[in-house]
Image 1 (cartoon, rainbow, N blue to C red):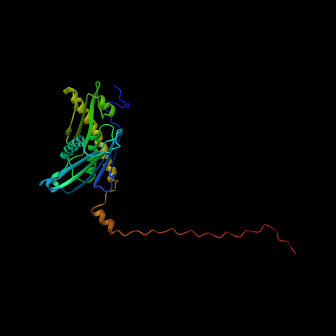
Image 2: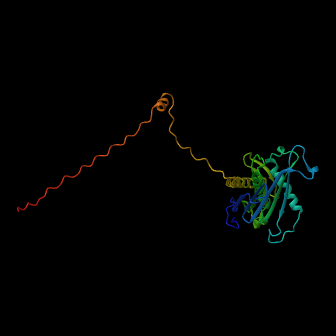
Image 3: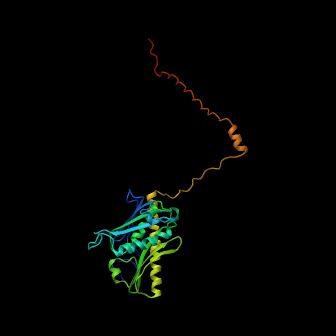
Amino acid sequence: MKRKDDRKPGELRPIVARVGVIPRADGSALFSMGRTTAIAAVYGPREMHPKRMQSADSAVLKTIYSMAPFSTSERVRPGPSRRSHEICKVTRQALEPAVFLKEFPKAGIYLFINIIEADAGTRTAGINAASLALADAGIPMRDLVTAAAAGKVGNDYFLDLEGKEEDETKCDLPIAYMHNEKKITLMQMDGDISPKDARGVIDAAIKGCEVIYDIQKKALMEKWGYKKPHAAEKKEPAETGEKAKQAKEKPAEKKVEPKKAEQKKPAPKKSTKKEVKK
């Protein structure tokens, strides 16, 4: 089945990932998938307020998710909603396994996610931006968390559904994934499909997460100026032992410049004219 934007079934929308977009935050990132754009900012670790929310043996990851009123074709009502509360919760649950929260007891890590443009996949874009922002803030992490959604449209498994495809799909299944540990930290499903199809949709989403993981790493390397080490230049082995001792004791030879050859004066020319007798 042909996709609305002529992508292949297993192809992601164009992705843009940038780190350090908010200078005053401890860490920040922008993550864009097609016409869905999320900006995340991290503040902390810092003292948790109110104190009754503190955890004695670990930090608390507090997530705040919101959509800008101009993010969709219809104006979004400002302020929290039931949907935003749900996404705050699942985002926190997706990220917590990757963060070393026990390193900061009684502290709070505040994570703000703002969707400035929405065309399906807002929670996955938000998780990808949040993971980059946490890494940019220097929060100790086991691994980056990547997120992607997939679904079944007709007989095909489509990766990274856009708005119109999301309306036509039999199932929308977003996941969050830790690449190095091969661990799924979030899985939700909206729809009804067979176990065989569910396995195919999950595999498609994981492949998308692996592509996004490389894009996240590249964005962090560009921000922090990481460069691949160049091949070491070959050096001649230094002399050791008796040869080195002789070379050290041997006086440097003076260069003797060759003497310049003396130029001979040319002999006077004989006159060829006959003398006239007086």
